[in-house]
Each structure stands twice: as structure tokens, then as C-alpha cells.
Image (cartoon, rainbow, N blue to C red; front, top):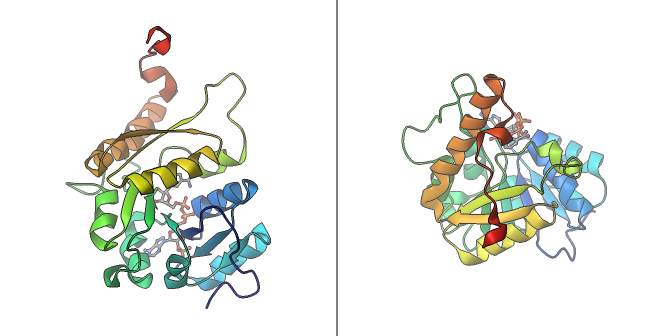
Length: 226
Ligand SMILES: NC(=O)c1ccc[n+]([C@@H]2O[C@H](COP(=O)([O-])OP(=O)(O)OC[C@H]3O[C@@H](n4cnc5c(N)ncnc54)[C@H](OP(=O)(O)O)[C@@H]3O)[C@@H](O)[C@H]2O)c1
């Protein structure tokens, strides 16, 4: 099924989102506030349609293969356990992602221990191996999705979203979408850095479990002296 009556129009970046849960809904809403149109889909078309209905005319629902076909940038926002299924439904092995920016925001973290579930590599590299020809960028996994619906709290510094990936165009597209959320993108390197970024999520969880605000657990660096 295609976008039907809510056709994808003149968005700067044609955004597709695979996933229909909290993260998918929050980022779809945040990007529509920045004027983008978004196509949402997951293993349940009913859930995708419910998200589109709730978020209004700038969001449409489709099956995963259509979401990918009609988008320049695709956010993968499903549970780690669901990644293989949603990529298969989207035609990843057949090259449906070829040439597109694929933004992986997933956390393959065991919430009890804070340790990554993949023994080696990263969730982002797992996505890259399956999304044949896609340009994977790790991004947006650290902040709560609903946080993007409000400005940074008063007195807090601008939010920095650390990202990594191997394709300059996909990094640029992701950076543009991060700026549209009101944050500052920071490229830390190629996709081999994805495990490092993914581990930070577990680190943050352990700090919170230890009763610390994570922003107090990294050094303040004064960059004003060049
Ligand atoms: N929520 C946040 O603030 C946040 C922030 C950063 C990163 N993330 C990451 O974003 C991803 C989605 O998180 P979420 O909070 O949106 O979770 P969620 O609300 O529970 O939604 C999970 C999504 O994954 C799908 N899914 C779950 N298990 C699946 C399976 N076995 N096979 C296929 N699909 C499956 C669900 O489809 P069904 O509804 O059909 O089950 C749903 O679309 C996760 O990797 C999470 O770590 C979330």
C-alpha cells in the first residue's frame, strides 16, 4: 500500500521511518514540526496508520518496502529483536536501501546490565550488513525521543548528537535532520565507531542507576581558548 490520500510531497529530505513505537512517533512528530513530510511503517500496517492518523497530514503510513522506496533517508527505530524482520520486510537483501541514508537509532543494550547484546561489532554494522548498498549512520540513540518535542531545558547547553558513518552524503543528510530537531550534530568518525557510541547508552544507564546525572560524569572542556 502506498501513501494513498496523504501523498509525500515537497519535503527537503523525504523521510521514512521503520517502526511504529515511541521513538518512531516522537521523531515523526518532531520532523513534521520542522516542515518535513514523513512516511511511517512497521510490521503492523494498522499501527503505522494509527501513528499517521494521530500526527496529521504531514505523516502517512505504508508497508516497510514502500517506506524505503519513497524515502531518501530512512530511520530504523525498532527494537533490536525486530531489526532483521523489519529489514527483510523492507527488501533490504534485494537492495531496496541502495544509495539511501539509513539512520540507525537502535539500542541493542541489555537494560539490566547496561551491556551491549552483540558480542562483537555493533547494531549499526548489523544493519549495514543487511541493508545492501545503504549508507548507515549511527545517530539519535542517546536522547529520549519525546525530548525532541521540547526545547533543551533552560540553562542546559545545546544538545550535541554524536554520529558516525562512512558516507559523506548520508552524514550530511543526518546532520541536517539533527539540526531540524534543534540540536548540533558532531561527526566522530566512520561506522567502526558505532560500538563506541552504542556503549555510551549503556554507560549512561549505569550512571543513572548509580544515582548520577550523566552530564556530571564527563569532563568539562573549555574550548574558548582554541
Ligand atoms: N524511546 C526512546 O526514547 C528511544 C530513544 C533512543 C533510541 N531508541 C531506540 O529506538 C528503538 C525503538 O524504541 P521505542 O522506544 O520506539 O520502542 P517501542 O515503543 O517498544 O516500539 C518498538 C518498535 O519495534 C517493533 N518491534 C518490537 N519487537 C519486534 C520484533 N520482535 N519484530 C519486529 N518488530 C518488533 C515494534 O513493533 P510492534 O509494535 O508491532 O511490536 C515497534 O514498532 C529501540 O531500538 C530503542 O532502543 C528509543
